[in-house]
Amino acid sequence: MSIVVTGSTGQVGLHLVEALVARGHRVRAVTMPGDRTLRDRRDVEVVEADVRDAASLNRAFLDADTVYHLAAVVSTKTTDDPVLWAVNATGAANAARSAREAGVRKFVHFSSMVVFDPDPRDRPLDEERRRVCGEAHAPYSRSKVLGERLVRREVDAGLDAVVVHPTVVVGPHENHHAGIVRNLIAPGMAGKLPAVIEGGFNLVDVDDVVTGAIAAAERGRTGESYILSGRWYSVRHFAGLCASMSGRRRPVVQLPMWLAKGALPYVELAARLVGMRAPFNAEELNQLAGNPSIQCGKAERELDYRPRAIDGALDRVKAWLESGAPRPAHSQ
Image 1 (cartoon, rainbow, N blue to C red):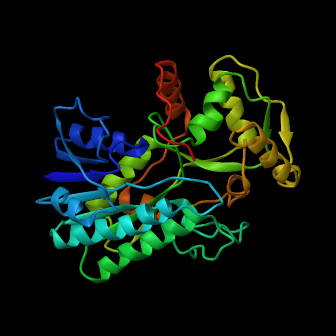
Image 2 (cartoon, one colour; image 1 turned 90 degrees about the vertical axis):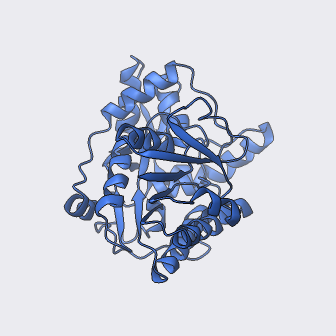
């Protein structure tokens, strides 16, 4: 079959393209104009298109059987950015509509865990949890909520689509944003992480996300959401894993969450004065204090999803960093 992947040069997109080719599929990788990441691949058809341009997607989706829509701007900024809404919301709507009009058999939309309200945090979180809303939540979260809602409008119009929600993805090729690999794993492995902040996160191997997404395309029920989570790790434990892999000293200082939140205005001011990015912001602290019990039981039952421990992903990240990983095209 002919399979189209938008966001094909991102962290998950590159792994998904590789997995689909290995399974014998004809893959059409949609890239932004000028992106030459896949220029040397002879086993992939590369098509330039911008999800903000519906006409370019119509051409990219021509004769496609399945579309995986990954194109997105990932950010933890607390200030609004028009590009977030243009790509994550309007772009998702354009992709879903173009897929329906092209007669695509299956559409897999990549959303995120951040669309779910973490509260109440003392109760397990699954696909039935309400979506976040209101200005109290970060623009990225709200843009992904709106994108999902617009995709579901096309489902109502006849599109066979499913939505997947990965948690924090760990793996090589974090090329287009500075996430956990750049901000925690790399400095941890280099011994440049003297302190960490209290809290934790649910981490998932990028290969498990890819396997889960392919299963969603094959067996997912129309209109359903599937959480693709892994395991919860405290920041301190995870940072220790990263340090031990390179024989570095584990971080011994852990800042309480209340102290990090109280110091945030001063941290941000100091960062602005020296022209650097603050080591953390309000949204990142909120995520570290998120729901610790994220459930993937639905994906396990319906997709045979079986997430692994994060060790294998860390090994691959270490090899990638040591090989001279390029700096991200843009940061959060």
